[in-house]
Image (cartoon, rainbow, N blue to C red; front, side):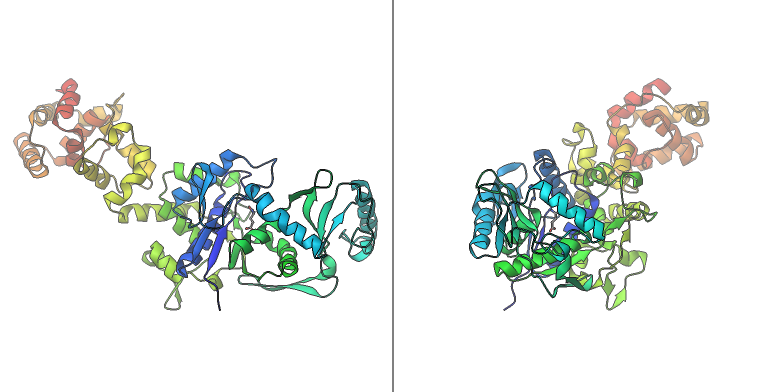
Length: 490
Ligand code: GLU
């Protein structure tokens, strides 16, 4: 019977949440959602020297912001709690309960052994392998028969634990993205599953060990991750077999490159999810742009092409997502494309959808404004390329201009316009239609064109001849503030 689909994203909190990691998480999420399965977030914090609580928080918050909700995993901001039946979801909290018993079992069953080789001994043998021009693989090839698998070293010494790897044949990976890969057994050494511990204790298990114990314990059916993990997979497959665990399906997705073809790095601009958030991008735009890296969805068997088709909703992405359509080769990240998608999605969104995303970019005075005020503010600035641009365009509503654009003043603050400004200052009915009618009447009385009065108003009210539509600008400021700002000009 096939198992219900379970995927997981398992970041190591050794740095910020990289956009490449988010793309992997997104594929896991899309796949789980498509199959009505579960998506797990697991924190792999066994690298004690580099993992920090701050990085864990950044991962959790970044994932929450980008909208990749997890069904099982940590609770944001509370390391003592988690949701889901397979916790804890931080590896360091699973040492005694999960990993050490699994290591003990393998030792007891003779599938793993204690290794007491000293660093000096290993270095010596490594040199020998180097001299022969072959890679050093513990207890395989030129090193066969020299390790603790065959001869026990001084039993009073601390030990690491190694897995007995198959000695002939090959380990086969049938990857859902990369295809069929064979790893000859003699290229894979008896790798360390638990580091050297204190005295007779088992030490901290290694990544390749914990990941298998966790993926099995958490009932993961599809391991979707970056292709930098392909080389780890044969080790993990051998461990699944030694433990008698059912193998999951593997899908290794290509990494992300910059536009120039080099590995995506700081040099190309923002790489962490926190930076994307600060740039004023909608999480939905980030999701869409990342999904489209290495994946060309097909609608009715035809690759999406037109600009309209490209703007897929989450529901469409979930429905169309197919691991078989993931490219094998690395994807190039294109910031312009992301910005374009962001602008499209901003334009498509309702003001209520945009409001929670825009709020963090606006001053506190935003929150108490009425819904109608917010509606005008958002719809009036929805042409912006980003939330930052929208917030910038709304700044005039919260701050009086500190200075006035000289050219704008010279060009638009004419003597002819002043009496009209005076009349605008006197208006009190700010309902849209009334305002428009009064405005047109003023134009007519003074023989002015819309642009003459609108630009003069913008300079006076906002400091520069740029603002949302003039009626929106007036309505957002409201009559008392319009009057106050016009005073110095009339
Ligand atoms: N913790 C690993 C990493 O951050 C991922 C492990 C996995 O997906 O198997 O690269």
